[in-house]
Image (tube, rainbow, N blue to C red; front, side, top):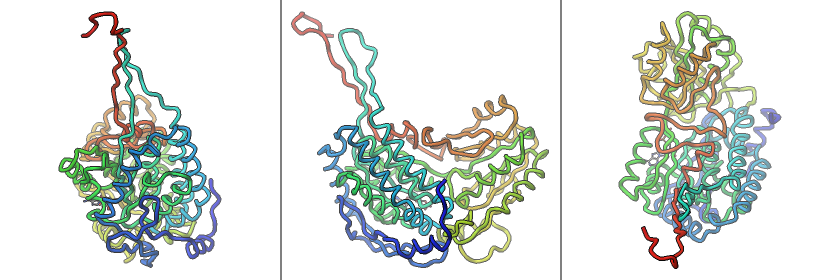
Length: 491
Ligand code: ADP
């Protein structure tokens, strides 16, 4: 655990820290040709900085530079051990700057500094380091041929990747993409969410300082229309790795089909269930996991528990325990380390979340955790709200619980609470979700793949060595071992 500073100390860092304000193209800080972006603090509405934003011309330049870097092989063909060393140096620089990065993260996204310090920064560093360390430990394959041939099945970096990112975990989602992409030897262009570009710009500068060559890691701030769309439609971008809404994910698939059939990997929305069976072991522990799963990051999390499907025999007791635990989850200024919930990202999103709440909520960007009992047909049991609202659905038996859990177009994560391991495993097999946790809430860790079934995902997985598959192509090399001097061996 990283030691936390005081509220006053965090505010002092926020006042004095250096804020990058330009796009990062071909190893240089550039003004960008788009209309400037105003980055505001979601908690106060105050302007943090006016930063560069890019347009199609900037996209064309960045894609050209990314291709040049890739085909010159300055990164892709570097000795794997050298690439590893540079990425490890990059991690050391992030570690050295972690306090400032945590403050930037908290300021622009509204996340509690507590989480930025304890989760986002450590996980960002761990992700890049894990992928860096894998670079010189991954082997290709030789196929089972007869003695007259040798077949090699090799993986090669896919080329130029564009990563389009969300605002809810600005640094961690960046790490989930750049870690395996850079480890695989790709050039990567990052388009951060328009609300949260500063941390990405800071990281690009640190990457360059660590020795990642020009054109290999570039950051283009801007909105979906002026940067995201031209990247996804670009003929010279080989792949898009996207995290965001299902709606935008579908558009990206369309852009790929309209252009060069670039590979598309999507990590989209969720409406994730936690099923609590009547035989759940320890309701205090269950309550602890549910509170974390539902309200961590203000529920602005694609894998948040947003549906509690609970057997009526334990519902009352469990809800009491959840409510009791929530007393420790204070909402307020994200830079105060005592707060576990910060501000929602912006007023549009706040309005959307509030539209799901029947009672009057005070104006402003803060919404305290809310638990509402609903019927399974209620829109709050169906829509991805992306806010601190837990919808509780009471069920009479196990089959009903599983059916409701699967009754959604999403399939990202699910949690099961039961004392029967047989039931837990059987239910895990029944649930249509990319990650199922048993007797806990979670997403696995860096070693395990993350992504969704159904409309929660498409085309691949983040994390683990599975993530490397996103950023590589498979090539077969077939070698004839017949001796040409020994007559007719063809065929
Ligand atoms: P949210 O609704 O949570 O903001 P979005 O899916 O709209 O989620 O945004 C996720 C990312 O996708 C952001 O970086 C955003 O700028 C980008 N984006 C939005 N629309 C498009 C688009 N039409 N093409 C490419 N990227 C887009």
